[in-house]
Each structure stands twice: as structure tokens, then as C-alpha cells.
Image (cartoon, rainbow, N blue to C red):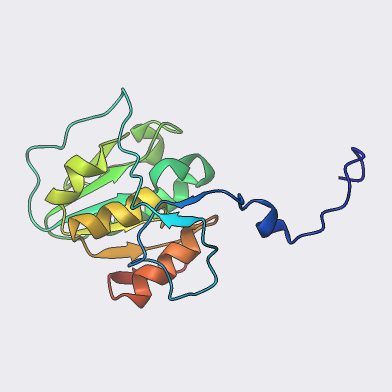
Length: 182
């Protein structure tokens, strides 16, 4: 602010982002921590689930139960391939099927050998895939977290940054899943 000649901030940084007219929270009060400090212009409107890309793939028809879904959502460009490799190795040791979505940062062959019971895809919409899975292992982003809640799918959350640790705590506090450290 000083460098650009902008006056010093008189309010806390978070307060400076809160509109005096309308604030929209893309969740529900049921998923919020108990609190009384939200301003009157704050409205929870329910989840805003991002679910589409033109490059969507279909849910594989040959999944065997139990189905474990391993994803890092749209934040995958921030995540090293070794994290996916760990997921692939774990899924390969399980009965049933594993589904891994990797986004567009890499090619499936960049991850090394794919276990026979695992399918690797770039992107499958959560609304199509979550109803077919038994558990989701994910980063704790809003769409993955709330999509799993809405589909009734147990979660294992491995948060990295941004809103993910906060969402992970909500999942754990409400008994919707487990939280693991990277």
C-alpha cells in the first residue's frame, strides 16, 4: 500500500474484504462452526459445486466394490507427482477398484506403472462419480468436501493449503471422515 501511495488500512485485513451490503457463503450453516460473529449481511446459500469441464470423462463401467476415489481436485498443479504415486501404490494393494483423477498437469504415464485395479483419468464430474464410490481420499477443497457430504460418502482428507485445513477440521468434527497429514 505504501509503495503505491494507498493509505494505510484502518480495519483488519479480513474485515476489508467483507462487503457492507452482502456476503455470500457457499456452504450451509450445518457445515459452519458454531458462531455468533457473522455480520447481518452474511448469507449461507449452500454449496457451489464446480462440476464441469468440456474435457469430462465418463465413469468407468467396470468398477468393482469397494471403490476408492483418490483426487486432489483442481489444485493438482500445486501437487507433486510423488503424492499421486503414493496414492496409486496404496490403491493397488486394496481389493476392489481405485479411481484417480489427476487433472491436466500431467499425463497418466508420467506417474509410472498403474496397478491393474486402478483407473487414472483427468477429470470426472463429482456428481457422476461420487454416487458410485465407497470412500474418497482428497485434499479438502470445497467441491470435493461438500460433494462427498451431499453424496453421503465417507472422506479421508489430506489438506495442503487455502481452505483445505478448515474444511478438513469440519469433516472430522462432524464425524464425516478422517484427516491425515501429508
